[in-house]
Length: 210
Image (cartoon, helix red, strand yellow):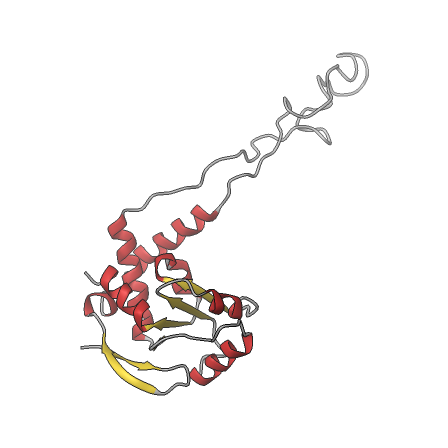
């Protein structure tokens, strides 16, 4: 059975934990993962892009010149689509990009992502993540350097919100701190290394391993 080494923040081994094969040895399904990523990105869109049609732009209340005998093409309004400052034809209008995906399918995508990370040995489990009472970015950098992942994009996941850790890591462009309930398929694919607290790992296995 697949297992993982539990470490402390200094990189010292403190034990081992068996991983749930239903989660970390699940079959990897790229098509489902891609569908889940596309859904996630679509659901992040605000859908507020908008343009004005010729009925909405200001001006153009009268005919710019008479219909005939001017030597120019006939025009009915200076706000028609072919005019500068005219209306826009078939431009974007406010809409929702929200798409649905069955819950079990989303879980399959997450299992695939975790299985891929475990297969590539890109998961690090810490007994706990405690940085003290005050935020210190240097403490996070030292932890990453000790664990040998300072040169990677790192996703740190805890079981409950850790304000000190969040504040300590927010100035690091390649580090993101999240909690178990907020894990999404996009983050699991974008970040190279996943650092979990032991409590977070147990909670993930309880949720997705069944």
